[in-house]
Structures are given as C-alpha cells and as structure tokens.
Length: 209
Ligand SMILES: Nc1nc2c(ncn2[C@@H]2O[C@H](COP(=O)(O)OP(=O)(O)OP(=O)(O)O)[C@@H](O)[C@H]2O)c(=O)[nH]1
Ligand SMILES: [Zn+2]
Image 1 (tube, helix red, strand yellow):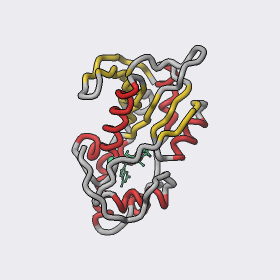
Image 2: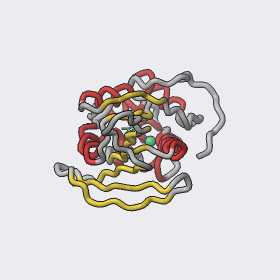
Image 3: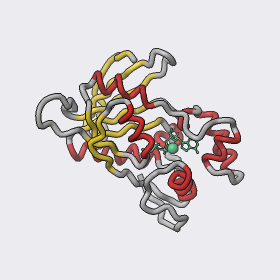
Image 4: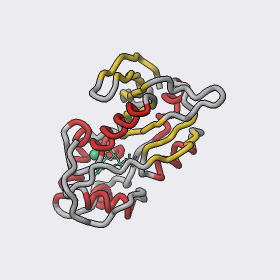
C-alpha cells in the first residue's frame, strides 16, 4: 500500500481531510477520511471513533434503499463530526468484494426471490470476499493502533483484531431500515451474523438521508 496524497474534504458536517492510498497488488485506490488528531501513540489518548466502510456505489452515491450502506456512511461521518475526531476508511471492495456488475447480477437474482447469500452462491461466489488486511498499512501510516469501531458486523471486528488492531469498543451503527431493505437486513442478521436489534420483517417508515 502506497500513500499518495492528502487534501481537504469540506462536507456539510465538517471539513475532513482525505488521504489517498494505492494498493500495490491490485492498483485499487483506497481512502482514509480523518478529522482532528487521530494518532493513538502516547499516554492517555482515547482511541478515535472509526468506521471501515466497504464501497457501495448504489447506496453511497445513488441513494439506493436496497441496503443500509448510504445511511451508515452518512451517520458515520456525522458521528465523527459530532466528536470532532475520528477516521473513516473507504475501502474499494464493492459488493462485499465481487464488484459492481456482479452485484447488479446478484440484485437481479434477488429481484426474483433469492436472498443476498443465495444470490452470491448462484453466481459462484462465497458470501463475503472482503480482505481487511488493506486497513493495516493505512492505519499504520496514520498512527492509529486502537479504534472504537462503528459496525454491526462481528466478522469485521474479528478480522481487524487478527491484524493486530485493537478494537477498544464496538459502536452499533443501525440506521436506514426501510421497506426496501428489511429482508436484506434480516438475511444479514440471520445468515451473516450481523448484530441488529430488530431483524423481523416489520413495517417501518422510510428513513430519509
Ligand atoms: N454481493 C452483494 N454485496 C452487497 C449486497 N448488498 C450490499 N452489498 C455490499 O456489501 C458491502 C457492505 O456490507 P454490509 O454487510 O452492509 O456491511 P458491513 O460493512 O459488513 O457491516 P457494517 O459495518 O455493520 O455495515 C458493500 O460493499 C456493498 O456494496 C448484496 O446484495 N450482494
Ligand atoms: Zn449497499
């Protein structure tokens, strides 16, 4: 992983700093978005609030309500801004690692009744192809050894801990449940192990971003 450059990222929530990295093996361009001093070296320094966010073009940029990604991205940046300090790694692992067009194929199967795990399997993919080892060099570069991680995904916590990153706390990030994604969220809780407080197919109002 090679560090390339940093610049300001003004948003409605705060003026963040964006740091660009290039992954040697794949040429993929990953980002770290920081606010305040996130270094954790030294005595008595609180681990910063953090999120590792896997790319979801449809949810993050195109307002898709099929998943909860866009809502989580929004809430994670808002939470970091509220604390005045934190870090979001934006990882180019679209579609849990299968890529954008394979995700569109998986969505087409889901339109016909498959769930998210069955659709991946029908296309010949494991349910989650993500590799979190790319986080380590980015966090090392930024001097971050310890995090308070915003996630509902215990596999993500375990993967980061296995890399030697200290997860001081898991902060739930449950936002964006709506009639278009309740089944998807139920499948994540039931088959992928996500820790979601409500995962029955109940009727809820559409949540705006
Ligand atoms: N293959 C596939 N990928 C999906 C689908 N829906 C969302 N994604 C991708 O899943 C990734 C997000 O995964 P999630 O499981 O929602 O979130 P997570 O990051 O593992 O867990 P949290 O930290 O709790 O959000 C993004 O890369 C999305 O593009 C789907 O139906 N099929
Ligand atoms: Zn998504």
